[in-house]
Amino acid sequence: MNRMKTSSRTLLIFCAIALLAVLFVPMWRIDLDAPQYPEGLMLLIYANKLGGNVDIINGLNHYIGMRTLHANDFPEFKLLPGIIIFFSIASLIVGILGRRKWLNVLFILFVCFGVIAMVDFWRWEYQYGHDLNPDAAIRIPGMAYQPPLIGFKQLLNFGAYSMPDIGGWIFVGVGAILLLLVILEGRRAKLSRNRSAVAGMLVMAVSMTTLSGCSTEPEAIRYGKDNCHFCKMTISDQRFGAELVTKKGKIYKFDDAHCILSFMHSDAIDQKEIADVYFTDFTGAHALVKASEAFLLQSELFESPMKGNLAAFAVEDSMKKIATEYTAARISWDQLKK
Image (tube, rainbow, N blue to C red; front, side, top):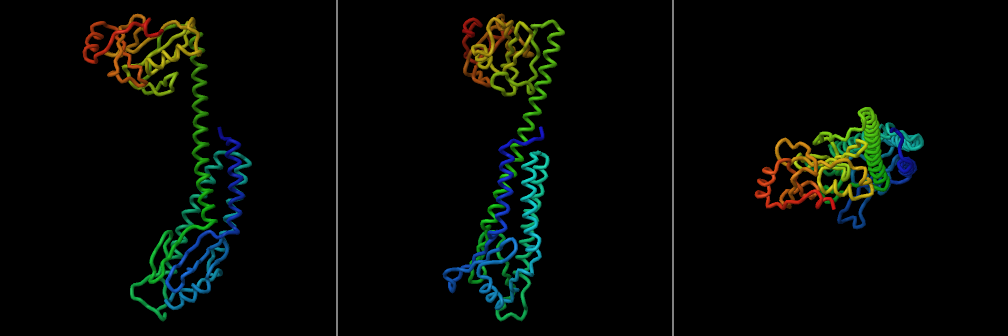
């Protein structure tokens, strides 16, 4: 299945609209706090310009030898609006087409862009804070003024806070939505393939049953592969498996006495259609033994997968030995299935 759900496609269209809003709001901000500026200074970074107290910050930077900030010096401001529009259009197209493979491509491209953008931002901050004018009025040997990529850093008497602004958080939100959709749609596709495989196996089983004259013989349980028909858990403990065979030869497998009894007492099957019930022998090679012929014990110490805590035995001597070891009580099949 390569088609996405309607809800997933709607979210992608929402992402496309949200990304366009990034063109009009600041993407990042750097706040500077110092005693001489009680209200603080702020540098806002948009997709295509700088905002905030740019002139005041440039004046301060001049004294310590840092380069002044001018939007024309940043080629990113020419590229970034186009990249944002590209991702907006791409999200819209993927949402309309609804193809899961294009969703995966969109997510990979979005993540790559995010990584490249953060690396480029760090590179700019490094150059901005380290490439100082040697003739500056204020020079401190070994001092660099690189702002933090994200979080807080003390720069002389200034405390610098770097964090995403509205546009940045929109990018984070869109990335989170894309990741969620990739996971959900991937799981849905996998579930669909599993259902198709199960359906094919059922058709094959029905065909084989018809050809074999509706045999009511039990089938070996494949531990670690077969799932319990009632609780859907993988049958893994070889001591507690169970199986029900109908008169038409249909086989139901279970991981515990609790599951097979619950199934028998439900409306899922007519009691008249049941040919035989089998339990796995608790000891020995763990072969299937007919419930009506088995020696049965119950004890909480058995700790079976679904707490049915029933053990079956083909040989009475084996049952007596385990009964003593586990302080188990004997019970008949007629008592158990009531």
